[in-house]
Image (cartoon, rainbow, N blue to C red):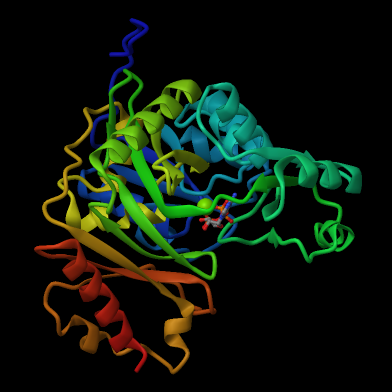
Length: 384
Ligand SMILES: Nc1ncnc2c1ncn2[C@@H]1O[C@H](COP(=O)(O)OP(=O)(O)OP(=O)(O)O)[C@@H](O)[C@H]1O
Ligand SMILES: [Mg+2]
């Protein structure tokens, strides 16, 4: 039932879920959906993709080809996402034919950092200070007003820290602007954070909201390296983060799963860094550590089913496996799996490039420290 009173029948097992994008998030979503008896169609420009390998059907097309998107959407009961940088043209085309969750307007807001931060700020959500950058004059006044150090990011299409420059007092602003290569930028005050956390949560058409326990994230070279939960934060910070996430979902009227990345400052303030209107890398430990995985939760949310329990079974950790692990040839999987609590997840990607997310390891244990040790030790066995 929707809160507005119009009954929207849930999509029951047997229905077909359409996924735009075909990487690892789509793969794990497709696997969860198929376990529950749904059919899965994926759409992306690639073939034999991580998600396509496990889907019922793999549609090949460009995200800006409205006709191809409409043809894809016609055969499914709901369209959802694993890749958020699809244009409004694509989401509008899909919405002409079927349900789309989250709505295209959510993607439109979150795929552009200035739109996203402006929306959040105007909704009263705490975010770092920021300014729009289109010229050297903009950059100079941002530096005056927000100070240095700072981070300059491209407004669109950044991931894994790509398109980001840290600005320090020794940098020439002319040079920094040149590196933007004419793209629009966003200047952000540098947050001297104590830690990075994320909340992955889900919301249904009827307004039911459930968050997973807070994840604590450690990045290396701007790429997520290790996540664990429970996070090493106070109950007060945990409650604050969850409350902020719930306000984000309401403000954007999100139906589906979204990851909310946040900074915790030394004073215990929580600031939102960015939103991902889909499942999130930090939520991968839910596959083995929680009653419901983030992927099953996405299925439930977009199909209008009641949400699943999000509690952890026990303290859990996840370590990403990047292509770098393959530098000495095929990793020694049996060495990592000798510790029987290690769970291996691989995404079916043929080519292991440095920095490319190829898989991850999960472990649960009696304490979060032990879970972290398990995944880190197992990973170090892989490439020895
Ligand atoms: N304003 C900031 N102050 C301090 N550190 C920052 C700031 N913005 C980003 N960072 C650091 O850079 C990382 C990547 O930033 P952000 O999440 O905005 O970019 P991204 O390219 O979308 O990365 P990802 O795909 O990993 O989420 C953050 O997790 C954080 O470690
Ligand atoms: Mg990020």
